Image 1 (tube, rainbow, N blue to C red):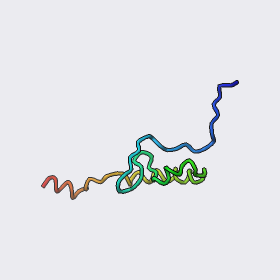
Image 2 (tube, rainbow, N blue to C red):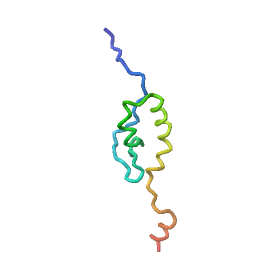
Image 3 (tube, rainbow, N blue to C red):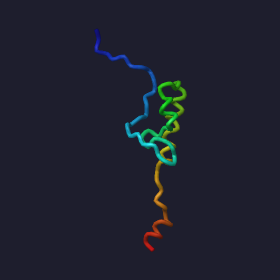
Image 4 (spheres, rainbow, N blue to C red):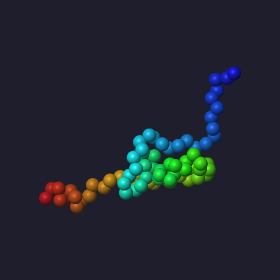
Length: 78
């Protein structure tokens, strides 16, 4: 008997347990995956998971709310 734990050789889920879907981008604000990607994750091939993982960093900008920039600042000051 050993203390080693059997582990599967697969890509870990990017889930951070902050499950809120952005109303406009339609992606989770925690892990940045779409609803379809989240529901299909356990059935995805490793190549498909790698593609999703590679796309996640570029999605962060989709969840950032703009505050209106210069026009909004001028409106607030005026």
